[in-house]
Length: 229
Ligand code: URA
Image (tube, rainbow, N blue to C red):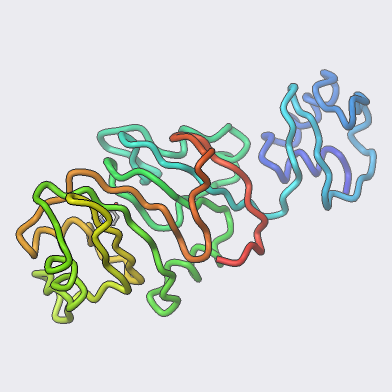
């Protein structure tokens, strides 16, 4: 694949922008400045340095972010900045989108991708990806409360009860709740339905993925597109 085409595919702007980066000696490979836009590379496993930043080639982008509070998952945020504003421009230009949504005040594991099929597969109710939430509650919780949630609660707009895949107290005011559905404000509504309230909500797991302890709020990292989820 030609160098200019590689940069274009990775979100470095128009073909003219990409040619401009090469001409301005902003693209390197292992320290060597690449000045020929037509030079051919096998893109698999290639890591270019563009404007001093390492850019591993990914035909499809899949990222994991530790979402901080105060950010919306929408591409058209209304009251707070979008999580997309935490990504560098090439990823935004590639039209990377959050997989599902976390509320503005929810923190933790958020996947983002530019792969429409993956978004569709992971968001499909048929897929039943377990999502693990660490819930801090306003009122104390114990095994009796957890058992009530495990039995399923009715949410007002829904004929079927919401059955968590798991629910266990982890402290006097904390619960670990595992859900395979993705209903609107589901955790907050479930806790409200049993007379409690969510004071803080953090997603620690998504399918087989666990939020790494060294990924700070607002940070993200690449995942292989075929990582088991
Ligand atoms: N449930 C909620 O209520 N909020 C979230 O952000 C995720 C699950």
